[in-house]
Image (cartoon, rainbow, N blue to C red):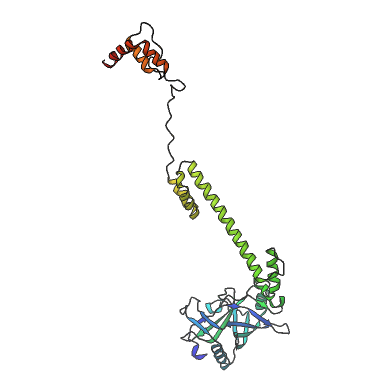
Length: 332
Protein backbone atom coordinates (compact mmCIF):
# COMPACT_ATOMS: atom_id res chain seq x y z
CA UNK A 1 0.00 0.00 0.00
CA UNK A 2 2.91 2.36 0.67
CA UNK A 3 3.74 2.71 -3.02
CA UNK A 4 0.10 3.48 -3.84
CA UNK A 5 -0.76 5.98 -1.15
CA UNK A 6 -0.22 8.96 -3.43
CA UNK A 7 -2.14 7.50 -6.33
CA UNK A 8 -5.59 8.84 -7.15
CA UNK A 9 -8.44 6.63 -5.98
CA UNK A 10 -10.75 5.45 -8.78
CA UNK A 11 -14.26 4.11 -8.33
CA UNK A 12 -15.02 0.85 -10.06
CA UNK A 13 -18.24 -0.16 -11.72
CA UNK A 14 -21.21 -0.42 -9.37
CA UNK A 15 -22.36 -4.03 -9.14
CA UNK A 16 -25.43 -5.66 -7.70
CA UNK A 17 -25.24 -6.29 -4.00
CA UNK A 18 -25.42 -10.08 -4.32
CA UNK A 19 -24.72 -11.25 -0.80
CA UNK A 20 -24.82 -14.43 1.19
CA UNK A 21 -25.47 -14.26 4.90
CA UNK A 22 -23.63 -16.43 7.33
CA UNK A 23 -25.53 -19.45 8.50
CA UNK A 24 -25.81 -18.11 12.04
CA UNK A 25 -27.91 -15.17 10.83
CA UNK A 26 -25.30 -12.72 12.05
CA UNK A 27 -24.05 -9.53 10.43
CA UNK A 28 -21.31 -11.08 8.27
CA UNK A 29 -22.16 -11.29 4.54
CA UNK A 30 -20.13 -12.31 1.51
CA UNK A 31 -20.45 -9.72 -1.28
CA UNK A 32 -19.27 -9.54 -4.89
CA UNK A 33 -17.29 -6.32 -5.22
CA UNK A 34 -16.60 -6.50 -8.95
CA UNK A 35 -17.12 -8.93 -11.83
CA UNK A 36 -14.45 -9.98 -14.29
CA UNK A 37 -14.22 -7.73 -17.35
CA UNK A 38 -13.04 -4.42 -18.71
CA UNK A 39 -14.98 -1.36 -17.61
CA UNK A 40 -14.55 2.30 -18.48
CA UNK A 41 -13.90 4.53 -15.48
CA UNK A 42 -16.71 7.11 -15.24
CA UNK A 43 -16.20 8.72 -11.84
CA UNK A 44 -15.55 12.28 -13.11
CA UNK A 45 -11.97 12.26 -11.81
CA UNK A 46 -8.72 12.98 -13.60
CA UNK A 47 -8.53 9.48 -15.04
CA UNK A 48 -12.16 9.27 -16.10
CA UNK A 49 -12.33 7.35 -19.38
CA UNK A 50 -9.55 4.94 -18.42
CA UNK A 51 -10.37 1.30 -19.12
CA UNK A 52 -10.14 -0.74 -15.92
CA UNK A 53 -8.75 -4.22 -16.58
CA UNK A 54 -10.54 -6.35 -13.99
CA UNK A 55 -9.06 -9.81 -14.57
CA UNK A 56 -8.78 -12.69 -12.12
CA UNK A 57 -5.00 -12.27 -12.12
CA UNK A 58 -5.34 -8.57 -11.28
CA UNK A 59 -7.72 -9.34 -8.40
CA UNK A 60 -5.44 -12.13 -7.13
CA UNK A 61 -2.55 -9.65 -7.02
CA UNK A 62 -4.78 -7.09 -5.27
CA UNK A 63 -5.69 -9.65 -2.61
CA UNK A 64 -2.03 -10.51 -2.10
CA UNK A 65 -1.19 -6.79 -1.70
CA UNK A 66 -3.96 -6.50 0.88
CA UNK A 67 -2.65 -9.48 2.84
CA UNK A 68 0.92 -8.19 2.62
CA UNK A 69 -0.31 -4.95 4.22
CA UNK A 70 -1.68 -6.90 7.20
CA UNK A 71 -5.22 -7.52 5.92
CA UNK A 72 -6.59 -4.22 7.25
CA UNK A 73 -10.33 -3.72 7.54
CA UNK A 74 -11.62 -1.72 4.55
CA UNK A 75 -14.26 0.93 5.21
CA UNK A 76 -17.65 0.40 3.60
CA UNK A 77 -19.51 3.74 3.58
CA UNK A 78 -22.48 5.19 1.68
CA UNK A 79 -22.03 6.76 -1.78
CA UNK A 80 -18.24 7.17 -1.29
CA UNK A 81 -18.97 9.94 1.19
CA UNK A 82 -15.70 9.52 3.10
CA UNK A 83 -13.60 9.91 -0.06
CA UNK A 84 -15.31 13.23 -0.81
CA UNK A 85 -14.87 14.78 2.61
CA UNK A 86 -18.24 13.62 3.89
CA UNK A 87 -19.30 11.27 6.63
CA UNK A 88 -16.94 8.44 7.59
CA UNK A 89 -19.68 6.47 9.33
CA UNK A 90 -19.27 2.82 8.46
CA UNK A 91 -22.09 0.79 6.99
CA UNK A 92 -19.78 -2.22 7.27
CA UNK A 93 -16.14 -3.24 7.48
CA UNK A 94 -14.70 -5.48 4.78
CA UNK A 95 -12.38 -7.90 6.61
CA UNK A 96 -11.79 -10.60 3.95
CA UNK A 97 -11.04 -10.55 0.20
CA UNK A 98 -11.07 -13.34 -2.36
CA UNK A 99 -10.40 -13.53 -6.13
CA UNK A 100 -12.49 -16.10 -8.03
CA UNK A 101 -13.48 -16.87 -11.61
CA UNK A 102 -16.53 -14.65 -11.04
CA UNK A 103 -14.62 -11.64 -9.77
CA UNK A 104 -13.51 -10.00 -6.54
CA UNK A 105 -15.44 -10.88 -3.38
CA UNK A 106 -15.29 -9.51 0.14
CA UNK A 107 -16.81 -10.33 3.49
CA UNK A 108 -18.68 -7.44 5.10
CA UNK A 109 -19.22 -7.18 8.83
CA UNK A 110 -22.33 -4.98 8.77
CA UNK A 111 -22.96 -2.32 11.37
CA UNK A 112 -26.55 -1.95 12.66
CA UNK A 113 -26.97 1.00 10.31
CA UNK A 114 -25.56 -0.94 7.35
CA UNK A 115 -27.67 -3.98 8.04
CA UNK A 116 -30.78 -1.78 8.10
CA UNK A 117 -29.86 -0.18 4.76
CA UNK A 118 -29.25 -3.54 3.10
CA UNK A 119 -32.12 -5.56 4.51
CA UNK A 120 -34.62 -2.74 3.88
CA UNK A 121 -33.22 -2.39 0.33
CA UNK A 122 -32.46 1.28 0.86
CA UNK A 123 -29.17 0.56 -0.95
CA UNK A 124 -28.93 -2.25 -3.45
CA UNK A 125 -25.51 -1.99 -5.10
CA UNK A 126 -21.83 -1.70 -4.17
CA UNK A 127 -18.96 0.21 -5.78
CA UNK A 128 -15.26 -0.37 -4.98
CA UNK A 129 -12.77 2.48 -4.62
CA UNK A 130 -9.24 1.44 -5.61
CA UNK A 131 -5.96 2.68 -6.98
CA UNK A 132 -5.09 1.90 -10.60
CA UNK A 133 -1.82 1.23 -12.38
CA UNK A 134 -0.92 3.37 -15.40
CA UNK A 135 -2.58 0.82 -17.70
CA UNK A 136 -5.80 0.70 -15.63
CA UNK A 137 -5.24 -2.43 -13.54
CA UNK A 138 -6.71 -2.29 -9.98
CA UNK A 139 -3.88 -2.38 -7.44
CA UNK A 140 -5.25 -1.80 -3.94
CA UNK A 141 -8.76 -1.65 -2.48
CA UNK A 142 -9.11 1.60 -0.51
CA UNK A 143 -12.82 1.64 0.28
CA UNK A 144 -16.20 0.28 -0.77
CA UNK A 145 -19.51 2.12 -0.93
CA UNK A 146 -23.15 1.17 -0.84
CA UNK A 147 -24.78 2.97 -3.78
CA UNK A 148 -27.87 3.09 -5.97
CA UNK A 149 -26.09 4.13 -9.17
CA UNK A 150 -25.31 0.91 -11.05
CA UNK A 151 -23.30 1.07 -14.26
CA UNK A 152 -23.58 -2.60 -15.16
CA UNK A 153 -26.72 -4.46 -16.34
CA UNK A 154 -26.61 -6.82 -13.36
CA UNK A 155 -29.35 -8.00 -11.05
CA UNK A 156 -30.17 -5.90 -7.99
CA UNK A 157 -29.88 -7.00 -4.37
CA UNK A 158 -30.44 -10.71 -3.91
CA UNK A 159 -30.53 -12.38 -0.52
CA UNK A 160 -29.97 -16.10 -0.99
CA UNK A 161 -32.59 -16.77 1.64
CA UNK A 162 -35.37 -14.82 -0.15
CA UNK A 163 -37.74 -16.12 -2.85
CA UNK A 164 -35.56 -19.10 -3.71
CA UNK A 165 -32.62 -16.84 -4.57
CA UNK A 166 -34.68 -14.58 -6.85
CA UNK A 167 -35.35 -10.91 -6.19
CA UNK A 168 -39.12 -10.26 -6.25
CA UNK A 169 -38.40 -6.75 -7.53
CA UNK A 170 -36.37 -8.08 -10.46
CA UNK A 171 -38.47 -7.98 -13.68
CA UNK A 172 -36.48 -10.98 -14.90
CA UNK A 173 -37.25 -13.14 -11.88
CA UNK A 174 -39.35 -15.57 -13.98
CA UNK A 175 -36.15 -16.72 -15.65
CA UNK A 176 -35.76 -19.14 -12.75
CA UNK A 177 -38.96 -20.85 -13.90
CA UNK A 178 -39.18 -20.67 -17.73
CA UNK A 179 -42.15 -23.03 -17.90
CA UNK A 180 -44.27 -20.68 -15.80
CA UNK A 181 -43.14 -17.73 -17.90
CA UNK A 182 -44.02 -19.30 -21.27
CA UNK A 183 -47.34 -20.68 -20.06
CA UNK A 184 -48.45 -17.23 -18.90
CA UNK A 185 -47.40 -15.68 -22.21
CA UNK A 186 -49.21 -18.42 -24.12
CA UNK A 187 -52.39 -17.83 -22.16
CA UNK A 188 -52.18 -14.08 -22.80
CA UNK A 189 -51.96 -14.80 -26.54
CA UNK A 190 -54.96 -17.13 -26.44
CA UNK A 191 -52.85 -20.26 -26.87
CA UNK A 192 -52.93 -23.42 -24.78
CA UNK A 193 -50.47 -23.41 -21.89
CA UNK A 194 -48.61 -26.26 -23.58
CA UNK A 195 -47.83 -24.14 -26.66
CA UNK A 196 -44.25 -24.39 -27.90
CA UNK A 197 -41.84 -21.49 -28.07
CA UNK A 198 -42.22 -21.42 -31.87
CA UNK A 199 -46.03 -21.26 -31.60
CA UNK A 200 -45.81 -18.43 -29.07
CA UNK A 201 -43.43 -16.45 -31.27
CA UNK A 202 -45.64 -17.01 -34.33
CA UNK A 203 -48.73 -15.85 -32.43
CA UNK A 204 -46.92 -12.80 -31.11
CA UNK A 205 -45.75 -11.91 -34.62
CA UNK A 206 -49.26 -12.36 -36.03
CA UNK A 207 -50.68 -10.08 -33.33
CA UNK A 208 -48.02 -7.48 -34.08
CA UNK A 209 -48.77 -7.69 -37.80
CA UNK A 210 -52.51 -7.23 -37.18
CA UNK A 211 -51.86 -4.20 -35.03
CA UNK A 212 -49.58 -2.72 -37.70
CA UNK A 213 -52.19 -3.33 -40.42
CA UNK A 214 -54.94 -1.75 -38.34
CA UNK A 215 -52.75 1.27 -37.67
CA UNK A 216 -51.96 1.57 -41.38
CA UNK A 217 -55.64 1.42 -42.35
CA UNK A 218 -56.56 4.02 -39.73
CA UNK A 219 -53.82 6.35 -40.94
CA UNK A 220 -54.93 5.97 -44.57
CA UNK A 221 -58.54 6.75 -43.61
CA UNK A 222 -57.48 9.90 -41.77
CA UNK A 223 -55.32 10.99 -44.72
CA UNK A 224 -58.19 10.42 -47.14
CA UNK A 225 -60.58 12.47 -44.99
CA UNK A 226 -58.01 15.25 -44.66
CA UNK A 227 -57.53 15.47 -48.44
CA UNK A 228 -61.26 15.25 -49.14
CA UNK A 229 -61.97 18.09 -46.71
CA UNK A 230 -59.29 20.18 -48.44
CA UNK A 231 -61.00 19.62 -51.81
CA UNK A 232 -64.41 20.56 -50.41
CA UNK A 233 -62.95 23.71 -48.87
CA UNK A 234 -61.55 24.71 -52.25
CA UNK A 235 -57.97 24.59 -50.94
CA UNK A 236 -56.77 22.07 -53.51
CA UNK A 237 -57.95 20.64 -56.82
CA UNK A 238 -59.29 17.10 -56.88
CA UNK A 239 -56.26 15.86 -58.81
CA UNK A 240 -53.98 16.98 -55.96
CA UNK A 241 -55.58 14.68 -53.38
CA UNK A 242 -52.96 11.93 -53.57
CA UNK A 243 -50.11 14.38 -53.05
CA UNK A 244 -51.86 15.89 -50.03
CA UNK A 245 -52.56 12.43 -48.61
CA UNK A 246 -48.88 11.52 -48.93
CA UNK A 247 -47.91 14.77 -47.22
CA UNK A 248 -50.30 14.04 -44.34
CA UNK A 249 -48.95 10.52 -43.89
CA UNK A 250 -45.44 11.92 -43.65
CA UNK A 251 -46.37 14.67 -41.20
CA UNK A 252 -49.94 15.69 -40.35
CA UNK A 253 -48.68 18.91 -38.78
CA UNK A 254 -46.71 19.97 -41.87
CA UNK A 255 -49.62 19.07 -44.17
CA UNK A 256 -52.00 21.21 -42.10
CA UNK A 257 -49.58 24.14 -42.12
CA UNK A 258 -49.28 23.82 -45.89
CA UNK A 259 -53.06 24.06 -46.31
CA UNK A 260 -53.28 26.93 -43.84
CA UNK A 261 -50.80 28.88 -45.97
CA UNK A 262 -53.04 28.63 -49.05
CA UNK A 263 -55.40 31.55 -49.63
CA UNK A 264 -59.08 30.84 -49.23
CA UNK A 265 -60.73 31.17 -52.68
CA UNK A 266 -62.85 34.30 -53.17
CA UNK A 267 -66.58 33.85 -53.28
CA UNK A 268 -67.94 33.87 -56.86
CA UNK A 269 -69.33 37.22 -58.03
CA UNK A 270 -73.08 37.58 -57.77
CA UNK A 271 -74.87 37.12 -61.08
CA UNK A 272 -77.56 39.49 -62.31
CA UNK A 273 -80.93 37.86 -62.86
CA UNK A 274 -81.68 36.74 -66.43
CA UNK A 275 -84.60 38.82 -67.38
CA UNK A 276 -85.12 36.78 -70.56
CA UNK A 277 -85.32 33.48 -68.72
CA UNK A 278 -88.49 31.58 -69.59
CA UNK A 279 -89.22 33.67 -72.68
CA UNK A 280 -89.12 32.14 -76.14
CA UNK A 281 -87.21 34.16 -78.71
CA UNK A 282 -89.44 35.48 -81.49
CA UNK A 283 -88.32 35.85 -85.08
CA UNK A 284 -88.48 39.26 -86.66
CA UNK A 285 -91.97 39.80 -88.21
CA UNK A 286 -92.95 36.26 -87.24
CA UNK A 287 -96.59 37.44 -87.24
CA UNK A 288 -97.96 37.70 -90.80
CA UNK A 289 -98.14 41.38 -91.82
CA UNK A 290 -101.52 42.82 -92.72
CA UNK A 291 -102.69 44.06 -96.10
CA UNK A 292 -101.06 47.43 -95.54
CA UNK A 293 -97.60 45.93 -94.82
CA UNK A 294 -94.65 47.30 -96.70
CA UNK A 295 -92.59 45.04 -99.01
CA UNK A 296 -89.78 45.08 -96.40
CA UNK A 297 -92.14 43.74 -93.74
CA UNK A 298 -93.36 41.00 -96.05
CA UNK A 299 -89.79 40.04 -96.91
CA UNK A 300 -88.68 39.96 -93.27
CA UNK A 301 -91.65 37.81 -92.35
CA UNK A 302 -90.80 35.39 -95.13
CA UNK A 303 -87.17 35.13 -94.02
CA UNK A 304 -88.26 34.45 -90.44
CA UNK A 305 -90.60 31.59 -91.41
CA UNK A 306 -89.31 28.02 -90.89
CA UNK A 307 -88.67 25.95 -93.96
CA UNK A 308 -91.64 23.97 -95.13
CA UNK A 309 -94.86 23.95 -97.19
CA UNK A 310 -96.26 26.97 -95.41
CA UNK A 311 -93.26 29.07 -96.30
CA UNK A 312 -93.42 27.89 -99.90
CA UNK A 313 -97.11 28.84 -100.12
CA UNK A 314 -96.36 32.28 -98.63
CA UNK A 315 -93.68 32.81 -101.26
CA UNK A 316 -96.05 31.84 -104.06
CA UNK A 317 -98.73 34.28 -102.83
CA UNK A 318 -96.36 37.20 -102.17
CA UNK A 319 -93.56 36.73 -104.69
CA UNK A 320 -93.59 40.33 -105.98
CA UNK A 321 -93.78 41.91 -102.55
CA UNK A 322 -90.97 39.65 -101.28
CA UNK A 323 -88.80 40.60 -104.25
CA UNK A 324 -89.47 44.28 -103.71
CA UNK A 325 -88.79 43.87 -100.04
CA UNK A 326 -85.46 42.18 -100.73
CA UNK A 327 -84.39 45.17 -102.79
CA UNK A 328 -85.56 47.60 -100.13
CA UNK A 329 -83.84 45.81 -97.22
CA UNK A 330 -80.53 45.02 -98.86
CA UNK A 331 -80.03 48.38 -100.55
CA UNK A 332 -80.48 50.52 -97.46
